[in-house]
Length: 267
Image (cartoon, rainbow, N blue to C red; front, side, top):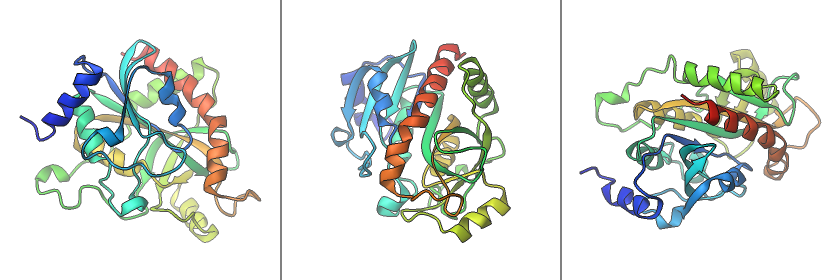
């Protein structure tokens, strides 16, 4: 019996035992996408051990059901490192996803752009990432499984399928490199200049720990950023969390089109 057996039983008692095909983790201002799922919403508060997703703009429910003909598990909110200093805060939800039968997970986030040709309202598929924080959710893991190869962490097949889905929907979606900063403060202009030198295209406060955890757990993973602001020093925009939430729906509309097409065409 797995260590999460009681939690899995609780979830299946509410949502049914049919295996989940894919997980979705929704970022800041994107939680409303969970409302599109025809299924059952379970508050995180009802799931022992689940993180407290305490950032406004998130929808802390696990929603299991059908979306575009695929059985999905949608995490309407995530816990961030900056909330309690735990980079492994999303380990339990991803462990649960595996035990529900999922083979992969799509991650979404709100991010700042370092590219003038990728303005607010754009979306970007992550081709790779830079763990600029230096933190790792596998620190303390006792087994040799902690030595996770990250060469193709962002699944090439998923990325190709997402690219095709975007093309089919007429959505411009460049690929790029995402840099993880711990937050909660936004980056300085000097930090952004450093990230540009390192090759970053977007910057945010999440996602990378989940990519690492997903690969550790054997999940295929891909991620998409919605661009909610230009990074510090890149424009006259006044960066704030309220601005992030206000701008997220612009990119979210494009993201939803791509995700729906991806699910319809998923093989």
